[in-house]
Length: 194
Image (tube, rainbow, N blue to C red; front, side):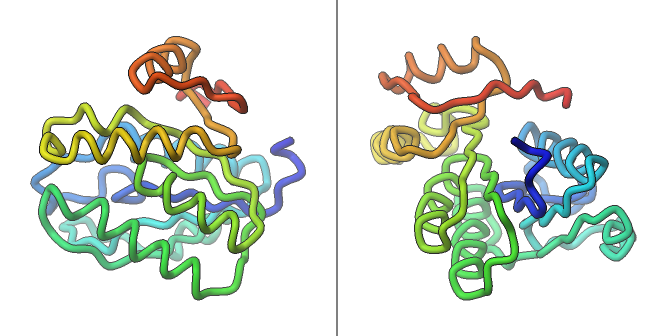
């Protein structure tokens, strides 16, 4: 399946490459490490990878053209600072960027509830195959305590669609389905250690 892909778009990481965001007081974690690993893995398999991430201020001097040599194209999106706003605002900017630009990817591989939800609509508008990785259960996270009910509905809606849900293990799949009280019909297990 993956060997037929020519261009894959990875969406959901608030920094790329992992570890470059030195000025953000909220550290990066699982999604960022996963996308970093996946981007390099796909590029080593000969795929062109497009990574949508935030524009960040950093102390690390990094030139995105270094990644072009590895067939990794980085598109940096604007965002609003703050723990509650950084992910939703970056994902909204990425959504509009994808909505109003020409489709230059074959597969949309999204990570996290905001990218997964918005990616569902992009996949319909642009006729792209979507794979989505939950990367945790958002409604249970402390920073979203006041939005718990809305986020749970959003997660149930998003993961009950026909896109393929990618889990890192069968344990994650079982926990996820139990917490959200749903069964994912179309799924893959891809270990984090690709």
